[in-house]
Image 1 (cartoon, rainbow, N blue to C red):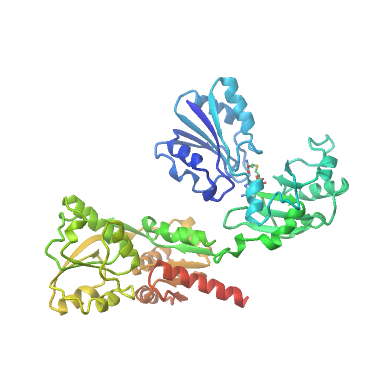
Image 2: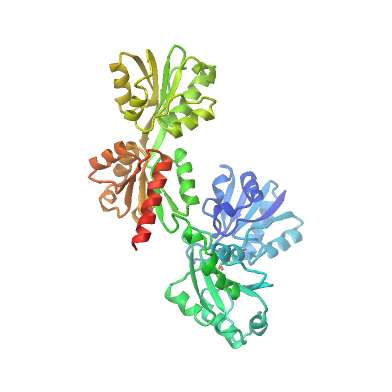
Length: 495
Ligand code: SAH
């Protein structure tokens, strides 16, 4: 029976600590705030109790006393209670008060520090909060207070103005003009570099830079909103040379991914790593089809046309009590590198991978391969190009439908996000069909550039009256990402 006060970092899910993820996965109860990464709770147990304790759209939040009572009452019931907060729990997170309440109630607690926004936001903006030549000290300051209020401020503005180092203000967007003028009044240099980092570490991060004198008006004209941190100090001037977040190839670009959620993660994480904001719009779902236990014995060729096919073929083989050795007598052909790598993960190295990753490419690659009996394991609704070509050559071909792709209706929120996206990616004809069926009117009004993985998917897009703006030259995920990067780079050069 321990309550864990856990920092969830500033927003980038990659900045959740290992310990935070472990505790989220183990928790019986999670009491969480608004400013935690959107995906932070994905790893929670499905039977965990999740309690939201933050403000909703400026509405009333749970009072601090209520939150402390909640932690004490859950903490005394036993089990693992995680109090999950943005950034670090002890940096402007009221974690100290919650720890005190737990101590008073005699409840054990532990603290899991998090990456705090006042360090991470500037870092993602290319601003080191200390620097050997530019700042030997850093002060974290609340900007929540009105420095001009008559009742007097808890902060000594003269001392802050004289502070020999970087000042980082949290919660300071609203009070920025008063903060800047109080520092100026205290004698701080008007020409000192300053920056404000909005939604730091998130794909939509924005940074405004200026001087102590100009930063408030610049932030106002850029309409900077909370959450944002304000940095005052010579280090803010290093951003010009050190900005890196915005230089990633897909920074500032939003890309919708329409493939099934189970398959989307590879593409989504590639895009995220390149700086894109990924809009999840899984228009299809993979449904495995039941079938008899399968044997691959007796075939001299086994063809696989997708990673899903590989996964499901192996589950059927496992059900039949056989393993990769069942392929010993057969040549194995994979339609592309994704399929080949799925095979490799199961201990089978594909003998044949075509240069063009479409059925026609596979037919060409098989031209000189003698085939008597072939097994083609694939989706129920696949094209017959490969099967027909093999049969024409006199081979006996058995087709096993391992799965079907079905529509996975998109929510209004997902559709709205796709409506705002810069690109929509299509990785198969079924993603096209099911996306446009789900999208209704939106389909014809999309402002996004459409990206197709290859000619077959492009042809399906044309059936829906849309010509893809981009078609990958290499018909796999790498090729699709490559096409996107080229398009974004070209449009940056043009503008
Ligand atoms: N405990 C948190 C701070 C909570 S106070 C931490 O250690 O980071 C809330 C303030 O944190 C916001 O008003 C803003 O100033 C800052 N903040 C939180 N997330 C931020 C982000 N992603 N980018 C910029 N500032 C952020």
